[in-house]
Amino acid sequence: MTRPVVGIIGNVHLINDQYPVHAGGQMNSRAVSKVSDCVPLLIPADPGLLSVDELLDSCDGFVLTGGRPNVHPEEYGEEATAAHGAFDRARDAIVLPLVRACVERGQPFLGICRGFQEVNVAMGGTLYPEIRDLPGRNNHRMPPDGTMEEKFALRHEVTLTEGGPFARLFGSARVMTNTLHGQGIKAPGSRVVIDGYAPDGTPEAIYVRDAPGFTLSVQWHPEWNAADDPVSRPLFTAFGEACRAWAGGRKAYPLQMAG
Image (cartoon, rainbow, N blue to C red; front, top):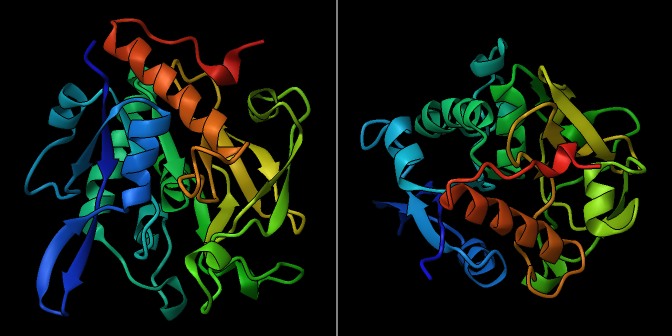
């Protein structure tokens, strides 16, 4: 049986500070293949190479990955500052309209870290450039030192809405997650529902209200240890089920609307 195709949004990198590549983390591909049971397809996020319509026709679902560049603040009506960091305008130009098209069509996507922020901006929301600079907030960035296991270790609890889609999916309204991000949601976009928070009030889990398909997105990185983590595995499994429904010509009843 042919597996659904999941487009994994790639990021631009330089090899040896010279050779430009479109790249994606192996853990994203592994989670899509081994946990979602879908074919991972790396997408070069550049409107000069492909269009949103071509992506929608070629893939059954999308993983909106994390990445070092941030969404440009012009996309939510603010001026860029040094605190906003690096940008990738080509990715902005592909992913933001892709999110809106998927919401309208019911085509599934899973937003992760930057992807979580892209969903909010695509729906009209805004972002804080640096969470750790806000009064009462913690530093959510990746630790600068240590092994990969130490950097991706579970670092804080996320409290989810009782009876909400994430709590139903995980079987608990409190879960432990890693945290490796600098920016975060300032104002939620139209129809964006914040369904989970870190202890310091930082939004960590969202979905799009009344969307006809899977739109669950998280600020943490569930691709790490996805096959064995009790939070990551059900998230990628549910996403894979939504992609199979789409590939089979059925709009999956969205988890965020299920009773």
